Image (cartoon, rainbow over all chains, first blue to last red; front, side, top):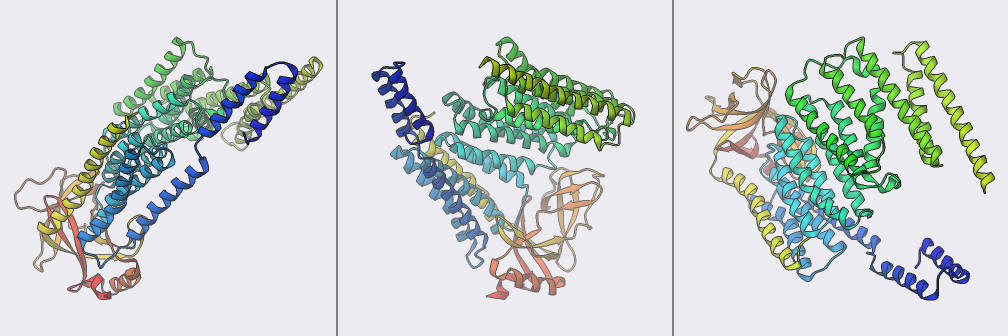
Length: 433
Length: 173
């Protein structure tokens, strides 16, 4: 029991025993429990160094091969390009056979994946030909997928999702539905693994970063549709709502943000997009003539999933943030404006004004929560959001001085009231103590 | 997720599958290199770096010779190859579907809008130590440069980049 929390616990337990809050037997049981936990904990530094080592060796081999050994015949070059893959695979088979676990398994998985990448990519160098790179990356991604499950490697999942994201970014000229199916296959294939990790250790560090990579791969998936003219603004916003909804399904709202990866990515994304949406300039030049049924179908698909999640939250009586309804109103309104061709020179201002009101309302809600729960971080976020929108409107030439003046006065009053309320609350709390 | 023995068996099966796919990629190109029809394309070029595959001489094949009935179509296309009276190959006509006429060699490419094409022949990978000298030689002799391309059933590889009748790599041995 070495860390500062353990030392604190030891000190506290001595006090509990003195005060008669716990007997000697209970204290010994607690001590034994934490000692066993500490012994079973994997060596994190060793794991990081081991995995980093194998990544560096793999990348080093790629660089050595990139030197291009011109004097070797083609057959030798092909054989050399296979070596990292063969070393990784045979090493992995040996490790699994011996039943070794921990970082060595992670290292074998990641090394084999780098080996697959090397072998496939080098064919382009050897034959001086680069055709449909997204197909090559899709093959690499799919070949590395079984390793994620077989080795149970979270790091390899990260590598798989990075490769998949690269593949999705390379699909520029591919047709829309191929991209959609591609994204669904790549992301869908990783979900069971993340689910298993979640069920095994809901708050684990590895579960957390699996979710972060999954959320970012989803973002890459949506971005890959940009070239086909999909309604990207709406889709990004819907996707971030989906993440916040997923978070509400998986974790309690009272849990710290840092323990909820979907909430972190979802909320950051939502506030950034919503902030950008508050600029009327942003909506003025949106072309509403290119909306076709294919684009709408994709939006409907995502909105459908969001509705499903909200319905599930309601029926299972989960305690979730009511902001979800506000987000949903915002997205319904944005889609409505686009769908009915309302984004003209005049009407786009209406959308921007409503979105400003929504943004300010959400900022005030955050501020209020910060005050209610005495959470300085939430209160600071609320104030920061309010400050951001105030500054943006101060420099915004799109609104009249009257509108700007009123918004500034309202914001100023809110700041003062928040300060007053907090001071009163603190005073009340102090008198109770 | 898996019992250890079952995991080992699955891993061996997956390894075999991965190896087959990787070998298929290389061998399919090797088959073209061994049995494909050879074409010489005139080129122009310069020297950059690919982070994964190393240094290469980037070159361009003339696409202005390509005709098509595809209008402003953007996407994958198939371009037939013909030879001029001097024995040099040129890109002839672009199609949306693979050409079905027997004996017609073609390559796959990308068409952008009204008449911009991208072919798979853009990079010739060279040894790091000779890259700069090769680039200089290439610049000084661009009118004598060509790539030898092997084509079979729409699949193609670049056999070599030549200056005159000599492979560029051989100038520095």
